[in-house]
Image 1: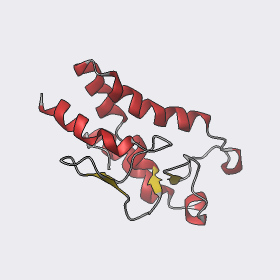
Image 2 (image 1 turned 90 degrees about the vertical axis):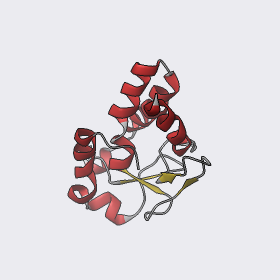
Image 3 (image 1 turned 135 degrees about the horizontal axis):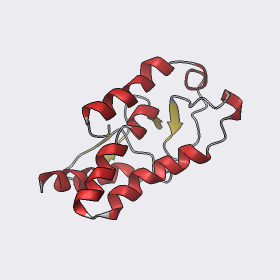
Length: 128
């Protein structure tokens, strides 16, 4: 199944210490790369692939798809967001999984960056 081939080719994007995906991955080589936000992962990029990978795990029986994106959900569930009144920041450090220390991540751009979580999930896009 071609979806299984694509899902497998994109899995290296999740090979980070935190489990948050890199911005892009070359499906031929498996080499992942950072995007325009450097060492950060945009919230929408980290969360918009939940539906695709979990459904792909269901269809193929390959638990590594489910595990890759569930690690992201576990990170979101356990993050201490008391400093932001439990609002999710827009950027997370890809290596540590912690909210990015940049002021724009902590204070703004919520509509700009997080709106695509909903839009991408509805459109069925692939992470990154």
